[in-house]
View (cartoon, protein in one colour):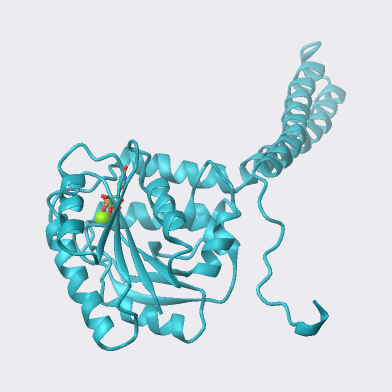
Length: 317
Ligand code: UDP
Ligand code: MG
């Protein structure tokens, strides 16, 4: 099989030489064992780096054809850079593994991923078995992230980042998703096909700093929810219904107080209308939102199906 590695790089001059060397070693070992063909490649995607990342990639490419480089016109963010790489190479190879430039994701899991591909799987998710090496902060925020995503109705693979193998067939399916708001982790499960997981231990970034500060992480989580789920809209509608129910309770309560005779004139009607109107308004917003949610899903123009296999007699053509 012809395997390509796709690695988005943003200001990674500190890690790139080491990463390139380690990946080369891994690829050579795999080639020697005969699992992957000798025309497999390592493709670096330069995501508009401001340092010498691109020069380093160019140098690597000249020294050894094993390395390839794709340079984006400007910084577009991790997800877009990754997609750019995947879409550029998808027709040239049998499968692609995407990973980060800092090699926090154990590259020894590549062997297992390739084995799974050879067994016939189209998507192999790399799943972190432990996060001991991550800081307490990163660990809790990241785990909270997966839980919130699930609660918001986004189907993701738990503890899976963007370290995964995808066959060219799965990539072709992915290419049919024309989303501009990109959250690959949520879209790949939607692509489907036979998939499985491989677990590994997540290591430390060996040089340089994280390109995902808290601000970017929050933006990423928000992006994930709003680009995949219309559950928040439904929650507004549910809240409206709830408040409306409370207003009925208030109505009964006010009537009771009124009959008891110890209320100020006009209090009952005011109290009930505040609750009822608030509830109806929220409910109405929720209903309108439901339609906006539909419009939003339509504008994504996602494929309604992808064919995995079609059994037919060849003669009939
Ligand atoms: N990255 C990118 N564009 C960006 C930010 C990050 O291509 O705008 C790349 C980065 O070079 C790395 C990967 O995305 O290969 C993951 O980034 P990082 O390791 O900093 O994230 P963390 O591991 O801290 O979540
Ligand atoms: Mg990292």
